[in-house]
Length: 139
Image (tube, rainbow, N blue to C red; front, side, top):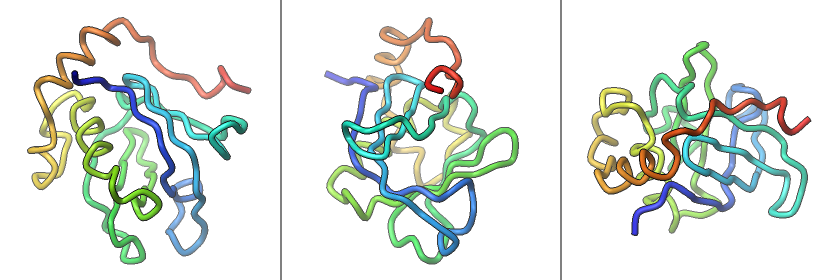
């Protein structure tokens, strides 16, 4: 059964900076539109965002990232993600992310096939009334 709940270790850029300026291994947890990341699986929440605040998702253009994605937010900021910590989970992450985007046009053409109707339906069914995520909830 399709579900828009996912968790696992990924690497992320630090505050949208280039990969070479800093990146961290974080435990990511996505529940519907809400994505939070933690210092460790049982550690403190280090941050998060709402998938609805994304403008575009593309394969990473950062040359230091061999396999990853770039999140471009509506405020112009970006987050770089690497799947090198968990390459076997990359396909699942990309499917959930593509399916939680409001439309396929918000995805790079190479990622549009990752968007699955079953996941889009599950998101609407299970998280349709989910309010916008705020980092202040966890501070």
